[in-house]
Length: 463
Image (cartoon, rainbow, N blue to C red; front, side):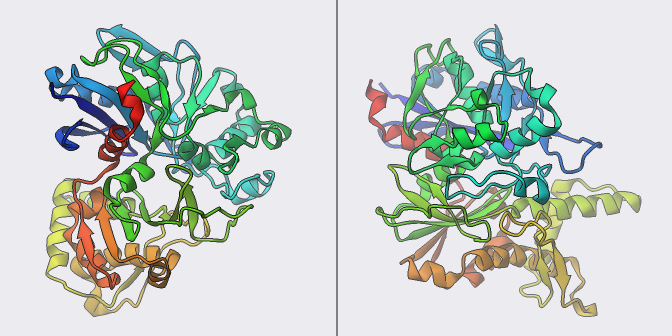
C-alpha cells in the first residue's frame, strides 16, 4: 500500500505541508498558507514578534487541506522552520488538544523571531565570548534570552521550556515535557559548540542565563518521539523526527552534487556550498567574516553567506509604494503593485542605477544600511529602480561570498531556489548575469520537501 512522509515547514511568513510518496520520493500533495502573524509593537520598532496562536492555527488549516485518506497512511513526520528565533512555553501545558484531532497553542509566549533587533551592538559586546565558531547576533535565541534576563526577568518566570517554533510543534505532537533540539537549530541560537554538540552551559550560567531553559541536544536525524494522539487523521504513535533547520532542509532538497552551490532567496537570502568532509570550523567566532559555517548532516558543514536582506527588501519596497499611492488617493493591493513593478522592469533590461539594499544591515556589519547611488534623470523610472533593487540583492550576496570563492571551492553549477526567485523573473535574470556559471532554477524546491526527503532516507522510518 502507498505510504507517505509528511514534511512541514513553519516559515517566517507561511506554513507549508507536503506529502512525499515514499517509493518514488515525489510530492503528491502540497499546500501553503500565509501566517499573517507579525505583531506590530509601537513601543519598540526593533522588536520582531509573531503571534504563536495564529501560526498554529495556520498549521492546522494547512493540514486540513491535505487528503485525509493519505494522511492516514503517513509513516513519519518531519518539521523544519525558521531558525534563530525563540518561543517559551510551560511543560505539560503548552497546548490544548480539545479540538478533535488537532491542537492549539496554550501557555506560550509570542515567537521572538530571527529578525528581532532588540539586542544592540553595545549589549552584544557586553556578553561573554562563546566557546563556539558561531558569532552571536541579535535575533539569536541565547542572546534574546540573555536580553530578557536583564530587561524582563519577570517574563521568563512564567515559562519552563524554550525552543524554536518548529521545536515547539514537535514537542506538542509527541507530548514531551521538554524540548529536544538538533545542532542545526542549536547553532542558530549561539553559545553552542558544534564540535562537541554541547551548550556553553558554564559560560551562560556565569552570565546569569537560566540554563534550565536550554533544550536537550540530539543529533540531526534523530527520532524525537511519536505522536501522542491522532493528528488530522495521522494515527497516534507515528514517528516524529527532531526538528531541522529550514535552510539545511532547503539545501538538502536541491543539492544533488557537492559541486553545486545553492542560492536561496525567500524572506532573507543565502548562498552556500558544501565544505569537504574533513572540514572543521574555526575554534572561535569570526564576527567580521561574511561567511558562516552551518552544521549540515552527518557531521558535515555548509559554507554560507547568510544575508538578512532578500525578498523582505522587495516586500518593503512594495509596501512603501503602496503607502505612497494611498496617500495620493489611489488604492492598489501589494500583489497587484508587485506584478506591475515586475512588468515595468522586464521592459527595462539594464540600469546604471545602483542600490545597496541592506535596510536591515548584516550580521557581520550591522551598521551598514541601504544606499541609492548613481542617480540621474534618466534612471528614475519604476523599471530602473526595481531592476536595480533586484541586482542589489545579488550584488550584496556576492560581496559576502565572491564568485572567485565559489570557483576555488570547485563549484560548477548554481541551483536557485526560494519563493522570491520563483515569483520574480527579473531577479532570475539578474542571477544569470551575476554568476558566470550554469544556473538551474528549482521553483518547487523548499524546506518542507527537503525535510520529507531527509526522513525518507533515514532508517528509523522502518522502526
